[in-house]
Structures are given as structure tokens and as C-alpha cells.
Image 1 (cartoon, rainbow, N blue to C red):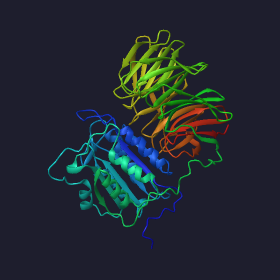
Image 2 (tube, rainbow, N blue to C red):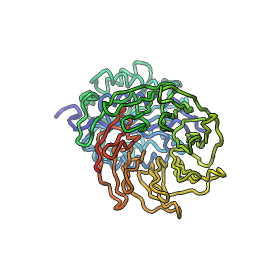
Image 3 (cartoon, rainbow, N blue to C red):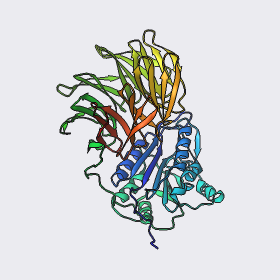
Image 4 (cartoon, rainbow, N blue to C red):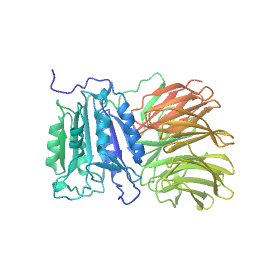
Length: 516
């Protein structure tokens, strides 16, 4: 019998990242976790691991995700690796609502999953903000072992410094940096990696029940291989980092925005990059074609930029939001509406580039918009609500409730019908006349991130489960599923009746053939 864990699976491991930047209540924010997320994604995507990112999540959303992980089947994966950013408590972490989730719940969700029996499960918990203590605290893992008949092959690493203090680092966790550096070096056994990392300075407390040797392998490194899929026309690595938004300029031109802080313009005939637009100081989070010559971009740098597509120059920059700008909609030829993580909606006059109005009613970030008519705006939010606004008197006139988690995307099908996609993994169809939910589709296994209209009876959705699905709304069934992305599908655009474009956290854009 081999003394090493088998890597002879059709897929490499899955990496789950649990990290929040902002918190309600008295908890300090952890803005540097974005550096951790970016580094982990880059390291493991490069060796073919699937990335499952759970960030800016409430305690309830975290618990629901853990429940899904507990029941998920992992027949084709060699291992699961879990990264957790925390405030330093050894028994719990916090959702962005300030409520705790026990670390034991994380361990149980994976360790008690029968499909992971005999496969290594690795936890790396970043406790760099752990308060100084004279006595080493009892670890949640000890409690877990005490009360659980543990069969899982598990390793848990609490990253610390001497006397359990890890210094603040605005550029992310020093431990995670050292760990990822060693993983990038090539095939090394996990215990050797942990020893080398501890010698570099950042310290860790390690609890393990691994029965064999575990290697981070580069066996699956195939980023540059030609993507082959009977439904996929073309696939290309479009950016150096995750893609958050794409927008069709015309049937032969596509714009994409990325975590690498650039906007790229693509020729969809030869798939060449026509131009790279630079100017934002942080991730590009949203794009909108305002007219045939004007592209609008929103960023985590809190600004809105207006670009002239004739010469690819930035015409002006709008400032006013206090957090990431994540959604847009055109109101008329002179007016733009923007939504932000600062929970506000702003209406801008593009003739003089001023903010006319700020609407406040949502209590979490504003993710998406649709325009019912010239006087009626609809918004979806992280607070799980959909709000209907009268643009004449600038008031919220109705609120639709039904989703249990964030409303991530909206789509108007006709003047009376609205579709919404949510973090609760469902699609809801709403009657706007009587403000009621007509029916709900259990759409995906993870959050629904984007929706596009195909025709009067069909919609297409993208999800954090890495898939794209086509739905027939008349008979309420999924008619087609597209698989190929190795991380979250964040955005989709219908190119024409035969082609669909998708962007993903795996840095790629894929062009899909769709049935007419």
C-alpha cells in the first residue's frame, strides 16, 4: 500500500476561501484579506485547482454554504483545501453581519462528508489579529476531536506568531505568502512545506490526522492547453486575474473588466485584444455601453470612468460613492444610475457630470438594476430585497421579498414580468402588476450571479457553481447546461442568436454555441 495520498483523479483539488473585508457592529474591518484571496487564487488556479470563494457573506450565508459542502459529493477530486481569514478567535469567525460561526462547523462540514473519506482535507486559518494571551487557548479542533468519531484525514493550521500575535500587514497575511511561495516551488510534501514556512518567520499551530504523505502537485497544470468542448466555440485567457464583467459593444466586439485593473476590448472574429484601457486604481467591477461610442466603467476604487470608444480615451471621472461601484443602468440619453457597496443609488447628469440625486433605502450593497419604464427603476441588493422606485418623486414605492440571500441580478422580460437571481441559488419570476412571485426555480447549486434574456420564453443564467444554464420559462425546465469554467461564472452576454460569451474568476472568456 502506498504511503502517499492518491492523485489519480479526473480533477485536482477544490480550494474554498472564506473571507470578509467589512463587518457590522464593533468588529474591525479586514481590508487586506483581498490580497490573501488574490494570492491564493493565483497559486492554486495555476496548478488546476477549482476555486470556491465565499466572501462578503453573512453568518447565515456561511452556514448555508457549509451545509451544501457537507452534502456535496466529491468523487473526482483528490483533496479539499480550506482557507479562512479571521479576527483571531480560535473557536469562531464572523459573518459580515457581525454574528459568529463556530470553526467546529467548518471542520464538521467537510470531515463528516462521506465522499471525502480517505482524502486529505486541509484547513489554513489566518489568525493574524489574535489577541495576546498568557495561556495557549483551547483550540476548536481539540473540542471537535473530543466529541466526534473522526475518520477524516485532516490537517488544521492556525497561523500565528510568537505568543500568538501575528503583526498587521496591509498587504495580506505573511504566512499565506510564505505558504504559497513554497507551493509554487513545485512538488513538496506538506510537512516539509510547513516546516520551511515556520522557519521563514510566520508561525503556526498544527493539528493533524493525516495518515499518509500529501503533495501539492503540478500534475494538472494545463492553463495553456487548447480548451476542447463540443459546446464551446473558443476559450482564451483574457486577463491576468479574475474577470468580473463583460459587455457587448457590437456583434464583433466585446469589452471585459478584471481584477487586474484593466478593461480590454476584444475582436470576436479573430479573438484578438484590440485595446487595453488603463486608469482605474483597483478592480473593474462593472461595465455599461451607454451609447455606441461611450463605455462606462465602475471600480473598487469608488470611481466611475467614461471612455470614448473612438479613440479609447477617458473623457471624465465621476466621484461620489464611498465604496465599490458595482452596477449601472442608463435612464435616458443624459442620465446614468449607479449602485454601490456603500448601499446607495446615485443618479448622474452626464451633461455636466454631476450627481443629481442619492437614493437610500437598501441596507446592503446595490448589485443590479432594471428599468421598467422611463419613470420606474428596479434595484436588487445584498439585503435580499428588490425595490421599485418612482423616479419622478425619487421614492421607493414597493419592496419585493422572497429571496433568503443577496439579489445578484435582475431581468425584465416584458412590462409585467421580472426575473431575479440570488445568492440562495434560486431564480424567481415576479408579476409586477400584483407584486407577487409567480414561481421559483431551484436553478443552481451555488449563487446565481448573472442573467440574460435569450427570447420571450428562454433565459440563460451563470453561477458560482461554474456552470451556465438555459431555462425554458414556459415549462420551467433547464434545457441546456454549459460546463468548462474552472471557477465562478461572473458575467454572461448574448452575442447573437447562436453565440453566448461568459467571463469567470478563472481569468478566461469562453464563447459558447447555443441552440436556436
